[in-house]
Picture 1 (cartoon, rainbow, N blue to C red):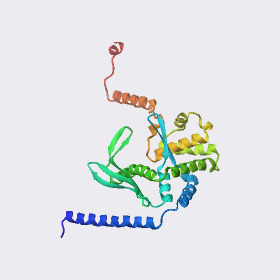
Picture 2: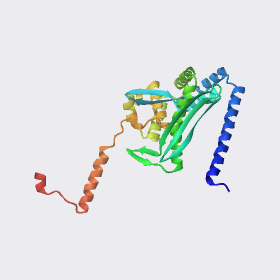
Picture 3: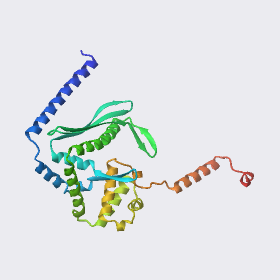
Amino acid sequence: MPAPNEQRSVTAQAMSGRQAQEVQMMLFAAKQFPRDVNVAYANIMKSCSRKILAETAMYEFPRGGQKVIGPSIRLAEVLAQSWGNIDSGVVELEQKNGESTMMAYAWDLETNTRQTKIFTVKHERKAKGSISKLDDPRDIYELTANQGSRRVRSCILAIIPGDIVEAAIKQCEVTLKEGHKEPLSDRVRQALVLFEKDHSVSKEMIEKFVGCKVEAFSEQDLLKIGRVYNSLKDGMSKREDYFEVRVSQDVGSKAEEQFKQQQQAQGGDKPDAGSEQQ
C-alpha cells in the first residue's frame, strides 16, 4: 500500500495532467472558433442596455481626496462573457499560518494575452474597530472569493480593448438615464431604503454626502449614490469612506448613568461634601 505522501503525489500529477489537457482543448477551440468582433461588440451593447446590469455597472469610492470611478465586477464579467474566448478566475495557491496565497487571472485564448495578480489574504475580518480571526472554512472561502473577485475584474479589464470598455460604460449611462419608467423621486426613495437596509446609512447621511436634500436630487446624484452602493456591495470600500458615522452621545450618557446607579446600589464609594468643595 503506497504511503500517504505518495498518494498525494499521484493525485497531484493526475490533476496537473487533466488541467493541461483542458487548457489545450480551450486553446484549440479558440483557434477553431475565433471571436467575431462585430458580433461581440453588439452583444456587449445589448447587455448594457439592460437596466439591471446598468444599475450595477459602476462603482465609486474616495481615495487620497479624490474620487475613483470604474467598471464594477458585474460589468467585467459580462464583458468577458460577451467578448468570448476568455478564461478567468481565482485559485488558492497555498494556505498556512492563518492566511491564503491567491492568484487571480484572465487569459485571452486567441491572442495569448494574459494578466495575473498574486496576493495574500489574511484570515481575519475587521468590524467596529476590532479584528476577529476566522477559522470556519466557509467564512475563509467567502473572504478569499470576495478579495479575489476584485483582482479578476482588474485582470479582465486589462485584456479587453479599452475602447470596448468605454463604449460599454457609456451605454450603461444611457440606459440608466432613459431606461426607467419610474419617476426619479420613486427611484431615489428605493435607493434610500436599500442604503438603510443593507448598510445602515440614513437619509441624512446621504444628503450630507451629496450636498442637498433628497427632494432636489438629480439623475446624476442618483447615479453617484448608485455607484457608492455598488462599491459597498462589492466590498470595494467601507461605509466610513463616504459617510460620517457617529456614535450617539446619548448612548454613552445613558450607559454612564446606569453604571453610577449600579455602583450606588452595590454600596460603592460616594463623594463626600469636603471633596466636592475642594
